[in-house]
Image (cartoon, each protein chain N blue to C red):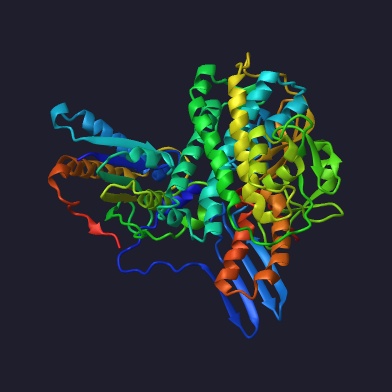
Length: 171
Length: 461
């Protein structure tokens, strides 16, 4: 099963960059894995959600989007939800961005265009700061290793799974 | 800009909580009809519309802009003139080229820099890229859903009959972005343009590589005109004053005089004598009006109305073939004007690439000197005015930026005043939607428009 992992985040807005940083760590981690055991995966880091995500989908069978989350949970909390059309509310999206397409818009658009794979998951990390500047806050940094290991575990077992394992229903 | 804030709140819906209700609504009670749109969708930035009609007469109408003030003019003070194109590019993620072009031209006037014909041509090519990506986004993803009766582009794409059009739009926008990145270094907040030219000019090979896609794009743009020509345009005409640049030899982008449909014809340097910027209480964006005349209309419809004969040959043919009539006083025709400009931009881009000679050196330098300079270029949404005062060391002492949406805001309110009586007897949801559509005719970029708020604190002992 080909997996596409897309980390989204602005690396110059502190914790907002957690998605891209997760992909960078995952890439390093995969490089340490013997070639024979490496999963069939493509990794992509985007500084902002844009239509290149649609082009990157290709024929992937599973999409994992890693992004910063603010839900009120303690910083560093990891979220994981299965995405289905309509499952993420539009709050803040429709009114803050029309010139760009948000994650929500991109996934809805990809679904409408029939480009989404059967399995789509949103992985999030609760953040505490989007202040200008590089670097994650300590709470978010501490969440990264476990996040990367979970991603790797999912990638290594993906071929064996009929559906995403521990995923909570998102809606 | 807003992308970061938006993604910092991806708003995963916690299980068990209801989805937030649509903020759009209206009500009818005791003969009073209220159209209330708390958050305008499919416009950039944060704005709201509030209209109260009582006994058939409008009692209250406000297009409120509560996008926070941006303070860019203040940020510029004390910075080197060389930073102006980089700082002002951040005002907008969709039209950074416009901000860069207005700033570099204004500063070149102060420094006495004359750019070479090669730099001039490359700047036009650069502007073509921005018109393509900005206009295509608005036509297909923001505006067409209004005409075709869909709440969003996503809903439109779900219709198999319209899916190819959305796929086409995504590819067209991608071509615009690729051209913008080839010249500017990257597609969002590009980095190559500088006062005097470009830090680095693309090689002919880099630009020629885009030719096949641009050729496809020209055909797609012609198909877009064919599509918009079939739309049902609400019958609504306004006796506008249209204002745009005009140039004797070309469709206006970076150069020209300021002309209007009511006979104004002035050099750019006289802009501030004719166009007055003022603050109104209900808006974080300033309003601009023409001295002694009132609101006016800038943007693609103004440009095409005032310069229709300068459109490229393919755009001219498309216009005739589909019986599109310009000048037009119907603001809903802005989508057709945008489509014609996309044809023009693709066709001119192909010509410019065919005759491209890299500017050598890529930019013209001059030592700093004190002075004041202003310039207007045609942003996708209309005239963008910049004025700078710099000192002997080249540090910016004062900056003024009039974004096109700032100039159109008063016009949008005036349009709504004229339009509301026409729709107020419709079911309130339908009336609300049509009012929103009227505002979207202007492709308003509220983030660009909210840039200054004068704060006056008096301290008394």
